Amino acid sequence: MTNGPGSKEASSGTGLARNLGLMGLAATGICAMLGAAINVMPFALLRGIPEIGPYVLPAYAFAALPAVLAALAYGSLGSAMPRAGGSYVYASRALSPWWGFIASFSQWFGLSIAIGVVSYLLVPFIRDMAGALGYSAVAAALERGPVRVGISIAFLWTFVLVNVRGLKLYERTLVPMMFLMFALGGVVIVSGFAFDHGDFAAALMASEGRPVPDAPATPLQLVPFVTAAVVLFATFIGFDSIAQAGGEAKNPGRNIPLAIGIAIASVGGFYFLFTAAMYHAVPWQFVAEEAAVRDVTAPGLLGYLLPAAGTAAILAGAAVALINDLPAMLLAVSRMMFAWAEDGIFPKGVAAVHGSFHTPWVAILLSGTMATVGIVGSHLAGDFFLGIDILVTSMLVNFGLICLSLVTLPRRNPDLAGEVKVLGRPAQVLVGGGGAALLGLFLILHIVKDLSTETAAWYFHSTWVWLLVMGVASLIYLREMARLRQRGVDTDRLFRTLPPG
Image 1: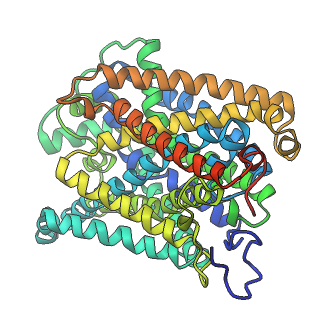
Image 2: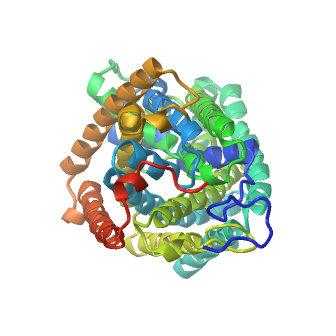
């Protein structure tokens, strides 16, 4: 590792600098959560689960419950173990190093591919925005494969370099874009509540000469309701990015749980208002009918009611949300790699820290390379949903293990358990046990849905790909642990204490 010359900000043992304040931490979680999914998932949901009908909002509220429990678990453990690669550190110290590594490795793989997917999806939003504003030639140029891939890679590596250059530039980039994202998203909320179903019916008749379909009787059904909640839960993925930055947070015992609370509350509230506004303006039965035959998005639906400039503003909000995903997610995945290398269960060179910028530059570059594979893979395959499904599987496992970690920490590591500052012990058991149970249910439903879907080959099932990744992670773990023991390292002691911080 390389420490910065004479830097008073650098942590004593790692070379990372605790430069990330409460606003930067909260922005990391918010921007990693609030991507373009909110413009798609609450509406595309009706294609796969039409039985959910008018109950999308209650399903969203139910999806938030395990996310809140996982957030409380993260905040509690983060107050006691504020280190880089938070989720890996929590599980390895509270459960076992094997569980910590393989769960975080699958999370790293899923998030890295998702970063590539996000980069690849960004260009169509820019294309549609150009089309809405009348720049048809620009929109046509953005349809070309080499142009799309090139722009995607350029966006990705711009934020790779932002991450390498240090947290001050990172924070100055992310925080203003976060406020811009909320402002542009607010256009949807204001517009949605300004119109009603009558306005939409009139606009649809005027533009296409057809009526809104009648709403069929749709009683609430338990299995479709919970299945829809599992899908919507994916939009809450991202707040754990705050925990991964634990080694660079100022006043981490206070700021990590507080930032997680701010992120989950603000994004959850925004999601609910956004979805409520959309369904206030657009009848659910129209969304269901359209979703059955084509991709539906918030800009496309509100386009019936808004002028071109309004539609462009919504598309710009979605594009900004996608752009904001990149630096926050890159920070998260690179810090997991750094933490593995710090513990010695990954090649030690990955823990190298830049002498001037105090960032884990090797881990950042490696994560950016894996994300580039995600871009190229999305383009060649012509589909990105497999990567998203792998990510959801990884995060359900990871969040479940974090909840379990809150329950088991006192038994495995009582000294660290005494440092938890957020919840008392009865609340820890309730939150950890309840979160693990709910997330386990969500995981089972997700796997059943995946394996029951017909695909062209086994490797299009996210469950089998995830298990393959877990196998690779186990082989890496066994090799590196054997090397540690050959060097005489007391691995039991190593994984009962925190890394340098």
